Image 1 (tube, rainbow, N blue to C red):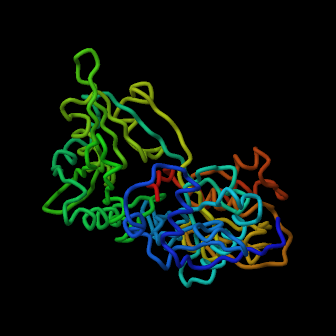
Image 2: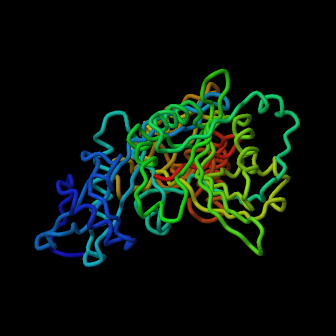
Image 3: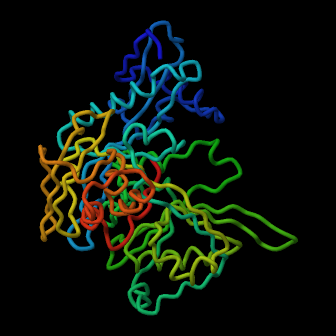
Amino acid sequence: MTDNPVRVGRASDPQRYVATDQTVWFAEVPDASPEQLLVGLAEEHRYAAEVDGADPGTYPGVYGVFPLRLAVPGPGAAARQVPCAGLTWVGVHPDHRRKGVLTAMLRHHLEQVHEEEGTHVSALHASEPAIYGRYGYGLASLELEVTLSRGATLTAPHLDAAAGAVTTQFATISDADVPERMHACHLAQAEPGAVVGDAGYYARICTQLPEELRDKESWRVLFARQDGADVGFAMFRRAHKWERGRTAGELTVWAVVGDPAARLALLRRLVDFDLMGTVKIGTVGVDDPLLHWAGGPRATADIATYDSLWVRLVDLPEALQARAWSAPCDVVVEVADTAAPWNAGTWRIRADGAGQATVERTTAEAEVALPVEALGAAYLGGSSLVALLRAGQLTERRTGAVAELWRGLRTDVAPTAAVGF
């Protein structure tokens, strides 16, 4: 730490903001203006840390926020969308590491969300997973990257008729209406665990810089359509490759969005493009039907598992009451939260048979003691509190209390993977 206090506020200088990001991530510097590089990240959602004597060309640290909709468990198997602050662009200048900059920025972010009416949850994708648990973020979902061979058979006999009623339409992300169509479709089709950005987010992912296109195809979008409306989409690009005179191209899929019938129709088209050898599909949830359609993990060419969304309950009672609960429970929990101290203390969590919960402070003796990140991990119904108990991440003071709480939070299907932001 340092006696030079860290001040965090709006980032007023786009050039300095971008220069800091490029210093932190040390990637190729594109030949583009700050406005082009920051498209989709509105000025009011860019923040920076300042200290006395800092380099005037860069900030000691920066972060940004994408306004998102997070699909949380709703009634039955449906999703309910709640506002979510998508933490992004987090970086500390190498000269200011270990000086409290990250802590100051994260606390500033949590205070900003706490003060914002209607938003009670923050989420992120972690570049270094070991960092964010210290600030109350819990790993709420996992992501698979599944590689299939070109021409792979996807079998779903009880879904064939529905998938057959879906047509597909080829588009390019530079087409005028594509960002709006993607946004509307994702908003309508979001499953629990998904995040949906605002219009600016889709404008961002549909923006391509010349450096990103070097020797590469533009990103394409395959829309699934039924009865004249978009019901799903897949964003992908192809790369030429030849091995011993034979085609071995690689098709990379950013995400596939839609109900199971739409996704099946899209995937059957994606594995059937000419000149391809493999199809690598990202943003796949662990319970996604893709593995069943393909015939199991060993029927794939390759499969990898990554952490997906990290969730932070900024306003604990409001966040827990915003989602539907799967079973009745009545448990008193003691929550530890140093980064957002307004959450710390003892709470009584009661959920009824209709899926509604009330969360209130209490003086009763706690039956479970846990860190706030454990509730973030369990929030989407994917990370078992019972497993966290076995792993020594929380304490049970009444036998069966953790299992009772987990039955209320768990869902029949694991949360889907979330697109990057």
